[in-house]
Image (cartoon, rainbow, N blue to C red; front, side, top):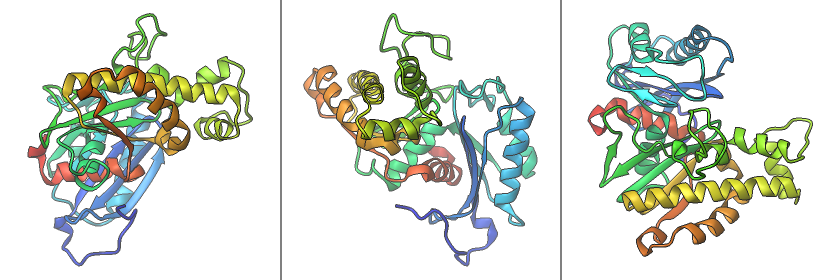
Length: 315
């Protein structure tokens, strides 16, 4: 496990990169040394307001993380979809950002160093592949299961992000042809089963009540044996397994690493996921895929973004 923070290493400021993680729930920024240690980590909740309000919060997080230091580059993981050619972001779970020029805005704020923009799940996948639960894999899918569901592919040791940076976006693959509408506009996506938001919404629609109805409360009730909460995790596990089995059949995966807020409830998510994988993984080469939780937790996105800033040729 990489430590959340680290003391100064004695390197000059120019050896650090800026790492940023942009999600529907929180914004995070940190300086990361060449040895992968985080310094000055800061977070902000993602504001519910307009595009400029979110940018202002992100800029404040960046300014606080950097202090008086300078950096040689920046890596930014952002919920997608993205256009990495244009440097814009249109996250499904940040409705006010549609074609938002986040890469150019950050470059202007920093005043010179190069900025690498990738899907947040790609950043997380890189970190897990290098430092965490993906070590030793040949073909890996890293997933972020949180407010939304994203994915990043590493095939034969190389990131495969696709022409626009959106390859591996497993959250918006269809697992139910007649399923509910997804925020992306499609039907029956993995995200409609498995995101924390979808799980809580489904549970509430089916009679679950709680004074603070969020994912942590739902997991706590599932551990206590609440039938609707258990059913929500069973439904999430089935949706996740169907998506993973399809991805494994398509890409010949040997490992899937699951991070994000929902992965913190691995103890209640894993049993229905394992059961459903037995049902959906029919072919022998699909059955060999292993599904494991993140080892790096909330730091995976920042560590992966930093690795890509140090070595943009990874993408």
